[in-house]
Image (tube, rainbow, N blue to C red; front, side):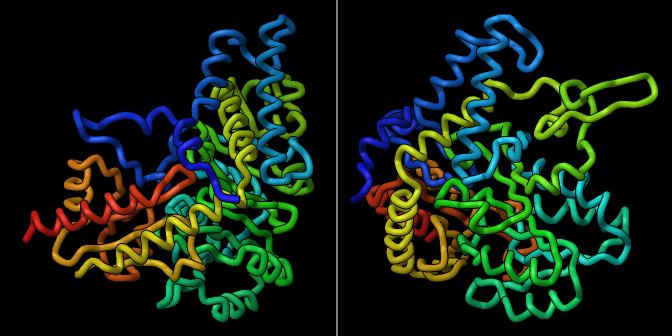
Length: 408
């Protein structure tokens, strides 16, 4: 069974727009942020129109309705990643804040000077900078699993690093530049065998294929709503209950406490002890609606569609003289195609493609060390999702040829 792409595209109002008169949008930047279906937009609008109230505080009708919608969304998100309990889903602003929560709460309590944290060379800045800050503050040691010449992680070198008894292994499930899908379950099993805790950056995996936190046995996982057809400004941290219960609060304020006295306080139960202040209520409801929408389509079918589109895109891109693709073979990657065009800066490529309505990303994509490894400053990046079509790939290819003609 294949996806009904036209039916899916009809769910996304923005895909019908023209970026300028007579120039329809060709959106190939879903790795940066995905577009939103009407179901998500309606859920958020309905909250503001019909149920707008603060949560966990009032006993009036609107407050109880808002609280119910907010917590139902948490349950939908937990089900989406197969978390054992919705109390293990902590609302945050995004993947970045989720990783920082682990760094500031779990790591500051449990790591000491000289303790080893293993990362990889393909990490987003969100999974680099928090650990740099902690290294400067506490003297922890950072080491990195290398990326091989065929754009995969060097697991032999990882095995050598594990002999040094790391305390934490934190890595991306799927690279936002290379598209490489890392063997998360194997990496996690190896880390646990060495006595390490694991943190998975699921920003690029959770939206695109089925991720089961129990099957992976991961200790923490961070992900964002806006990558998975939900709103911006909200994400989640999943954590094993025994770890979350021992972690101190991340922020202090309202709703994260059971009791406050002038000289002391007692934190709230999970998940609320990590959720200080009035949260992004409408966004949480939209997050839940996004999880329900993707579930209704089937993640395995979404992954299959993306694989087919990506494979087709890579074949077409390889036809273009002077174009170099960064990333492994299609069987090892998700819906990302980062490339350079000989003699033309990636920003120029993206800017000229935009004249034809084609939205791609250009830059180092918040993965500067990875670009430095391959001795390049930037790449252009086309990325694909459940609403992407072969026809859009063909328009991209035609657009790149027109870029070449312009500079030639």
